[in-house]
Structures are given as structure tokens and as C-alpha cells.
Length: 410
Image 1 (cartoon, rainbow, N blue to C red):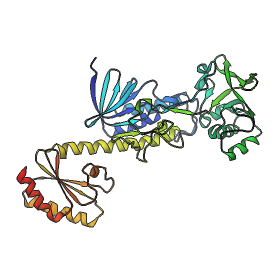
Image 2 (image 1 turned 90 degrees about the horizontal axis):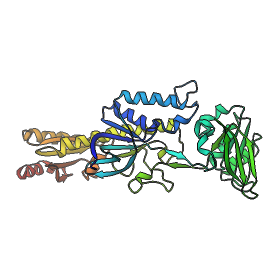
Image 3 (image 1 turned 90 degrees about the vertical axis):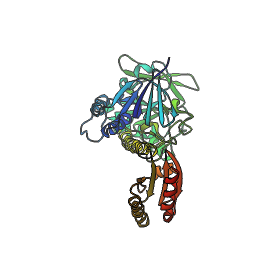
Image 4 (image 1 turned 135 degrees about the vertical axis):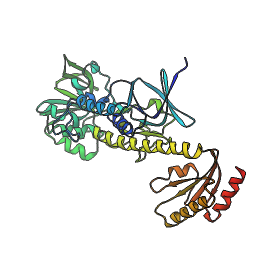
């Protein structure tokens, strides 16, 4: 079956906070924008019962309610939304093709905001109590809900121990299930020392979760001692898993640079190693993963995608798509010599009765477009005829001679 083709300025993969925020920026910039989400708009944030640390909300707000605001704002800027699974990305001429089961979406720019998923224990009944039914993955998000209650943490890394200490500010009791022998943890030494003297924390060594128990909501966890096989039941109000995080990047392996753990590497402008492909949110290799940081990433990714599309359009329509000779003057506006030479090139154009099309490219803020034309310094005059670069000139004293040659051969 031949797939349908649809064309967009920007396609955003992932409908969590990062994806919807990036879509808002792109839609507001009047770019034709498609957002693709395979499951639920809002992502993991929708499973958080209360969010207290997202700026602008003086009272706690449910994750689902907050994501409804994101969704509403996103649609206000005419973003198209499709609920389907992305199978992969490929490069095709000047497009990045986002492939789904029935449709190939051709985009000038792509933002990957697929987030990730917490690693699970695999214990019995785990699926029954995920997220808002007792099993959580973010103490910062859900700690207030467990005020004066009993919780159990699984894990002994930095996140587990530090989040566990944070929980003791709210909960009356925090059990910690550690897979290692007594006294051995994966967290840094400073965190270990503080946790071991915290009177609200109790460590259960050599244990893993055997099962989760309860009716509508989790109320008991059964741990298994790895040395004796003994089953140890604990009455709890909730459980926090901190045994790792798995990014949703399986469809991009081989195309996008990633860390050994599968997180996408970007620069501060959210650019990946593939031109025109950006990444934002929890899918990135970074320190903190919160709704607020996802939105910050997305703002940058959305703006950079807008600039990229703008540059591509200018390149295709004004330079490569022009019918006659184009003289592209690449300069840095803060350099006096570059400004002086621009004046001379403009005078040449007037003297020759506008026989060629003069385009100006200021690289003060970004030299990415200059790199496309392999210009390693300024000022530089690039002569383009019928979409092909025919000459680069750094000695602007020769500009008129080279333009005359090009016009004669055009």
C-alpha cells in the first residue's frame, strides 16, 4: 500500500509538555505545524496527581488539568494533532520524512520530544497501581500528597536517596528497599551519610519487590529477601520507583547521536547532529527532568526550528530558486570592513543597472547559512547561477570583474 504524503514546515514528535510547548511556539510563528503523539496528550505529566512547582500556579494543580491548558493553547495556534505512532525518520532531499503507518509527513524541520518512561520492577500487580493509584516516579511532584503517610522507595542511587530525604519533609515514614548488602548503596557518599542518620528513613537491605497489593489503590508492598527468600509485607500509602529511566528513542537509533543510555545529545540550541532535527524535554541528555525544564527546552527548540525554516525558505526561494545570476554577499554587520564592502557591492549593482540579483546575509547572530556555502570568513561574495555556486570571492576588489565574467557566461 502506497503511503499518503503530507507536507509541513515543522513536525513535532511527542505530545507531552515539551512537544505541546514547541508546537505552540511554531504555531504562533505561523508555521504549518503537525504534532504526533502515539498515546495520550500530556505524556507522563498527566499521571501526576499534584504539581506544585510549575510557575504561574499558586495552588497545586493536577497534571491532567495542567496538560489541558497546554493542549488548549496549542490548538489555539492552529496546530494539527495526530494520534498515531511514529515508525522512524529518514532524510529525503530537502525534507525530513516522519513515517507513520499510513502517512509520510514531509517536514523542513523536526522536533523530537518523545520523552521517556520510568524503568519498572516487573513485580506482580505492578501495572494495576501505576501513577495515580499508588506507584509514583517523582517525589518533587507528589510529595505533598503523602503528608503524614507511609511510603516505600525502591532504589539506592542518587535520585532514590535524595528524593527519599525530600519525602521525609512530608511523610511520617519512608522505607527504602535496597538490592545490595547492608550499608551498600549506589548514591554519593554525602547523600548516604545524611540518609542513614535520618530518623524517618528505614532501609530494608537485600530486597526486591515481589508484589504490590491493594484494591482500588496500593496499600501493601511485599518485599523478597534475596538471601533467605523470606517475604516481607509492608503497609504503605504509596511507592516511589527510582531504578532508572528509559528514553523513547528506539526509532531514531542510527540517525541521531545518543548517549550509551539512549538519550539524545544536543547543543544549547537543541540541535542534534542532523541538520533541521531538534530535540527537547526528557528525551535529551541533561541533568533535570521536570515539566518546567521541558518547556524551557521546547521554547528554544521551537524558536530554532522557526529560524531554520525561515532560512531554508529564503535559501530556496531567493537564492537557489532564482532564474538569473545571484550575488550573495555574506558579511558580519559589526565589522567595519564588511559594512564598507557591502556599500561597494551595492554600488556595483547600481552601476550595472541591476544586471544581477543582490542578496545580503548577515552572520552576526548565526553563521549556519554561511556554512552552507562553505564560506569560512567574511566578507565573502558567492555567485550562484541556476542554483549552483559558480564562484566564491574573498577579495572584494575583484568583485566587479568576477560578476562581469559570470554574467557573460550565464
